Length: 457
Ligand code: TYD
Ligand code: MG
Image (cartoon, rainbow, N blue to C red):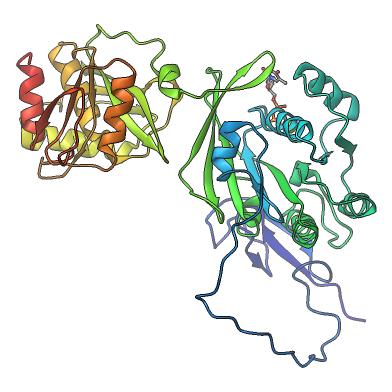
């Protein structure tokens, strides 16, 4: 009899080795290799080795007619925006996020919203008991008879339950890490189990036209544990994120086969669940202290929508041999670059100063367009001069110190105007003949902006 062969699967990246090691050679993570049985389940060798002759499939021209993907919009505007206009029938979506961020809350509300529009929804929880989920639903005012509820962890049972009735519009699996299938004989939560469970549920969705939403927990490194391997199996990956001390949450698209990937939805966690925030700028600017030096308002673009956020800088003389540079909400390397450009091209001496940079409200900026706003905040703090509170900034800075135009200038300015700002300081060439109600000062060089701020202009 053949000896049962075991293999070691990295729980972070899913790579398989025949030998245990302390560190995964593929992704470099420590202590992530777990022994799993290779004799059965997904990834095992086929039982019968006699190859079947394939049947030819019909090739179609690339230029053929296309149909718009049929969608089910739930009516929660911020969620529909992020999915690209609603859940696509027959697709699978992975929603990742820290424990306690509000994934179950969001999905309970989405389920109720869909049920109110007459769609059937099935909510399968592997984490909470039925009574707990009902209690939450009552609190959220989401008690809807069209939502079928089950506390179950066996994928075979879930699929059998789903197949017993008409296919629901939406199947919510909370969470994929708690599901296990008999097809794979490793422990629940391991990569093999997660992958096999997800495969079974995605197969059901594709076959019947239901949309499946899989919830995945995120590790402290910010990666969906185990479900990393699920990311390429699903059609869309959304992340639900937020800062511990703040009550707002951002739902972000990371991957979407049926829509844009740079959208965000903004919610506020209240005692009656998640509330949509239709105008995030007002939220991020709500507790501004405009008269203090070191604060600059940046007009950002997230996907298709403009968002205004405050960037706060503190530049203080350092007692350390190597001054501190700390940044929250922006890229560390990008800050170093702006500091270097300020030193080398604009004559701003920061070598003996600690620099702290914070994006207000726990928001995260990914755009290089924040360079000018960051530079303005830094210079304002160093000079001890507050920027005029009705100014917004945006623009990229190149290593030569030149101010480079960025996209969507019109939208950024329109949002600023809507929120009562009167001035904009932006790179030359952004406007491109567009009209705006703001008083626009254009700069071709970062040094000009620095001179304007330090000179009190
Ligand atoms: P939950 O949806 O259970 O998080 P996840 O499923 O991502 O683990 O959300 C739990 C948190 O949300 C918890 O800290 C309490 C808070 N919360 C509210 O503030 N208001 C509410 O109405 C609800 C239902 C939860
Ligand atoms: Mg939950």
